[in-house]
Length: 154
Image 1 (tube, one colour):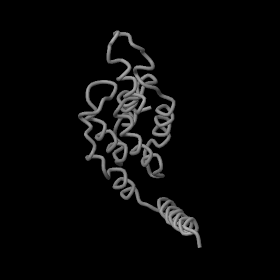
Image 2 (tube, helix red, strand yellow):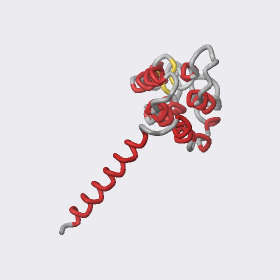
Image 3 (cartoon, helix red, strand yellow):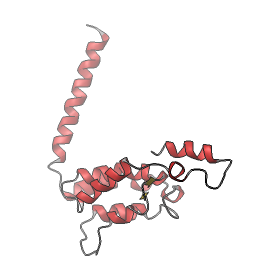
């Protein structure tokens, strides 16, 4: 038996385990989805991340509101993220950290405003960096360094 045969068996077992987990997702309650989404949310240094304006400290609150069941708001909380982690075709450092949580929310069949979450994810996928949109309008010597940093987010 070759080394690769053992690896193939191991990969097959991992795939089957993944299939079982994916199948179980369809039977999760809304509370289970919320727990899965919130896992790791507070471990991210949101205050240090760059959004469109100010600080990204409000991003976790928006994600929690999206995951929650509260329905008495005038507009969906996901719309707040259209002005912070995605703005006019631009994505930011905070965007890269928020996307995994948005994906879990979008996968939740119980999620409120699921279509809007998917629209935001689609907009982010087509977004680009601030430097790519605006160029070196301030004639900064740090422009290339910043542009390279932003490419990691996109």
